[in-house]
Image (cartoon, rainbow, N blue to C red; front, top):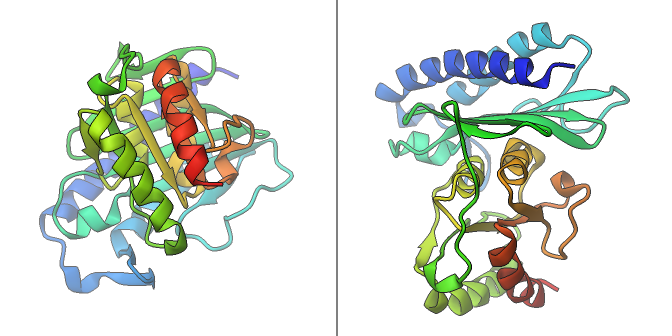
Length: 266
């Protein structure tokens, strides 16, 4: 399989869908917002974008299954060799509130391994992509994780999940411990973009819990192909998509942050 060629075709598909999202962003009416759960928002834009992606990706690789955010029938792996893992609009809350930080994330899974991934930062028109063994790229330029070797020169990204609030005290303890040691903390509101920014060295690290496979599939591959490490909080790399948590960073910063996070999330 020509994974590089597949990436190029997925990029073209994402850019077409990104154009639709940008058009809707200009005049989106908040009254058209729907709720999947408390603080879990969705709109016709998410649903339409997902349908567009599924239709075009199905033509690209007809033998593949799908794991998608908005379709309740596409939540689990099947017996197919390949699966597309799709987040059509990662950062819906930002989109609804007219904050221009959201993305499209598409990963291709072979068995249990992500072998190709594309993250389109929609409003910035930045395309991050990678394929297994081929490296990671931003708009055609090879990227690498940060070379920082110390927390004091590191900018760390995280998220604040709206579910499992019983874990919030542990999360706040971690923030309190690492904040004084680093250059600061950021919360973009799009896990896919957090991982893409970690892959290209804008962030030294990113960690979060209560994540879904479509949040992180493409981003995991971006970080790894850019020379970084992506694990769960127990430092395990395998089956990361379905653990619900991630710590991604360059090797040195990962080693510094991992014990702080694992000690709090026991």
